[in-house]
Each structure stands twice: as C-alpha cells, then as structure tokens.
Image (cartoon, rainbow, N blue to C red; front, side, top):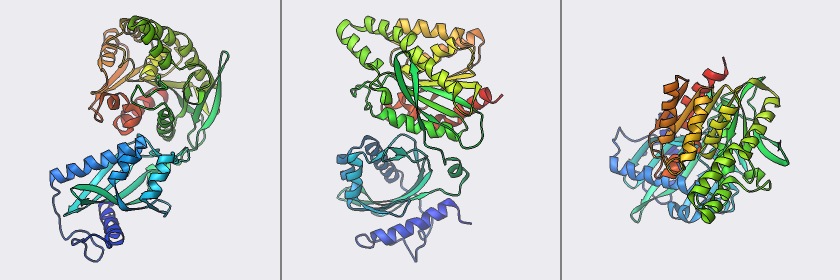
Length: 436
C-alpha cells in the first residue's frame, strides 16, 4: 500500500504532466514518477512558498478577489473533489459573489517539493473549511497545489482536491446539517443553529456563547463572519459526539432583527460618555439581558431531542467567554465550562469586569478551562482567574497556546481560526467532565 507521501508525489506528477505541459519544462518527472532522488528543500524557498500559500488562504477567508487575482496565474486550473474543472475566472467570480466562502479551520502543508521554477505543495484541510451556497462541507480534504515562479514571484498554477473518503476521520465527519431553532427569551424570539451527532443518543451537549460582534468591522472581522464561526465549530463538536447549540443573541447573526447587539451598544456608550460608562454598561449587559438569553439557550438545549440533560457544558469566546463564567456561577447543574479569551479585550480597562469575573470563578462549582493564545489582546484574565481557582483549590485547567497568525486579532480569534490548536485538549477535558 502506498503511503500518503508516495501517493501525493504521484498525484503531483500527474498534475504537473497535465497542467504544465503547455508552458513549463518539468525536468524532474520521468514516466509519471517522483523526483529522481531525495532533494532537500532550501529553507528560504520553502518559507517563501509557505508564506505565499498562507497569504492565499487569508485572501480566501476575506473574499479578497484582488489579492487572489495576483496570486493565481492567469492560466490557473483546478480539479475539484467532484471532478469539475475550474478556471481562474470561475474561482474569482464565485468567491466575489459569496457563492464560495472559506473559513478558519486549519490547512496543513505536509510536503513541499521544489525544482527550479516549479513547486508542489501537498497537504490537507480540516472539515468545515469550505462553504458553498451557504452550506459548510463537513469533509476532510487533501490537496496538491502547483506553484510556478514567474516575473519574480510565485503564483498558483494548478490545484487538485480529493475528499478523504475512506479514513476514520472522514467517516466521522459525515455530519448532519444543523437545524435552525427558535429560542424564546422574554419578548424576543432568538434563533440558533443546533448540530446533532450521528447515532443514537442521548448525547452530552454544549451551549456556545459567541462574542459581541459589532455590525461595523471595528473588531477586524466582518459581522457576517459570525456565521462562519458557527459553521466552523458546529461540525467539530458534533463529530466529537456532542449536541451543539450556537445561540445568536439579540442583534447578532440570525437574531439581527431582535434588538441591538452588545458591541454596538458599547461602542455608542463609549463615544457618548467615555470608558467608565462603557465599563458599567458592559457589566450590566453581562449580568442582565445577555445572561438571560444564554439561560434561555440552556433551557432549550435541556429539552432538545437526544440530549442528556444531566450532562451539559458551556463554552464561550471573548464577551461570550465572560458570559460563560457568569453562567457557570449561576447554573450549578452544569458539568464544565470552557472560556476562550474571555475578557481579554476589556481586562486592563475595566476594574469592574475584573472584580466581577473573580467573584464568578470563586463561586462556580464546575471545572473551568481557560484558553488564550500568547498573542491575544491579553492573557491576564486566564492567568488571574486560574490563580484564583488554584487558591481556592477548585478544579480548573489553563492553556496559553503559542502565538497564532500575525496580529492580536488573530490570536484573540483562535477559537475558530485555529481549531486544531485546542481541539484535542478541549475534547479530552469535556469528555472527562461530561461522560462520567
């Protein structure tokens, strides 16, 4: 049986033969086989290629067709996993219109081969990376990309994509599409996306509390990306055997018509009255309507089909991470809480928030997992709150993962932009707490 590396090299030969015959001399291919012998890839050239490929990934996630137009060769061709042949024009048209979208789950370059002005990258992408016509594709893919060096820069000439159809991972990722559910909360009719694992329940469940998501792009992420975050996380939790509810609180995502979201309210308060007033409003929102809405999500989740109501955990990110800690304090029937970057953007500026979260983690009985990237806006919240749990001898875990991406915004959004970074640790933690 061929190894993946052997198969990928053979695939590279086929691609190069079929795509490059027209315009590129490929001296290192003989009768469809790999290179004539082992050849170390120059570190600087490989680094350039990985950088260009990462730039291409960033442009795909942003829908930046201008950048993609520079990165794709004019004679670019792609063979999709369904066998469709697509040109540069086809890709730019569908990415520009939003028909094809890409999101955070990681791609991993597994092998790089360079011969002169031709390079072949082989790797794999996680389930949920591709969204077509609004639907995330929950299948793992492996790819071969051919780059050529022209006019002083590397451009993508050809791509071939295959679905990993016979691996345990691929089998496990045949996830049902989510159900849209209505979550009553007072006079509001919030909406959420509910993923269920395959198989016979009941299953443990997780409520996810998203961040504050301003309708402008102040956070560095367009408001529409809340859908991409949901689509990235839902299949992963479902694949690990959890019913997963991504609740859109007022003013956000599918609940955009149910009031004004917290981020916009906070921005308005800051502009009109200053930082102290913003801090006061943030704390009020966390302890009142936002908390009430999260509790409504929990109530629905406990009644959802196939849910083991006695084995429910919560998780949240940023503003939603802070909300998760307050909910863990309030609802003592929960099994665990996972806090992704909670309070990171507000910690230094808000003594009110610091004091309130310290009180919450002191009271919460559930085990809590604090998570930051080293380049988050601040990792002080996790470190300080974990130290309080340690002082009180209450169960907790903390991980400060290596810096991710190129900015504090990237680090802050580790939760959906780099799922493989935390996936093993988080699901080991959740399994230990919810499957007892």
